[in-house]
Amino acid sequence: MLPTRPAEPQSKPRELGSGLESLGGKGLGGSFHTERVRCILLPEVIPMPVPTRAKEPLIETLPLEERIRRRAYELYVQRGNQSGSEFDDWLQAEEEMIRAQEAVIDEAEPRRRG
Image (cartoon, rainbow, N blue to C red; front, side, top):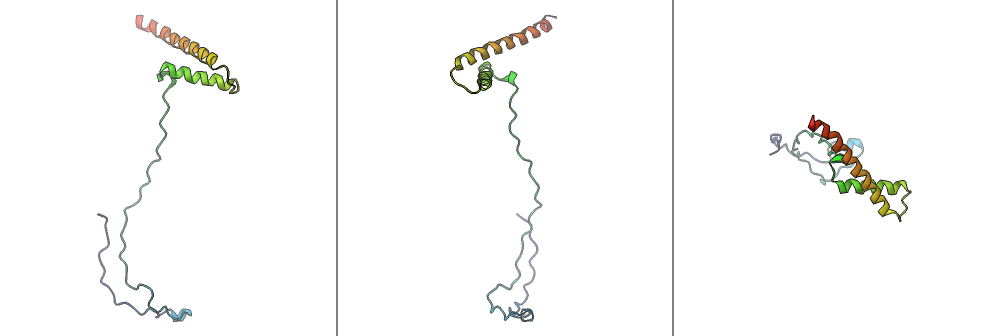
């Protein structure tokens, strides 16, 4: 429940026209509400942190096929986005990824043996 101010005793409604004549007005003829209105105090607004985009996983943690797909796309873009060599791009990307994977395995093996 939101905190509220304690109710104030209602004062006698005053004449709407009183005081306005001195400002050049002719009175409003009772068309406005003259009673006090209770206000609800809202809690302090605390700014929320902006959600960040999910970080993309490191390329090494992606499945082999996804790494090949991304590299093939890079090759396609390097050729100026011209179609017709998709299969060649895939084969080149596949070869590069398999060689890179074998190099990582070769680097790790001396540590396992030693």
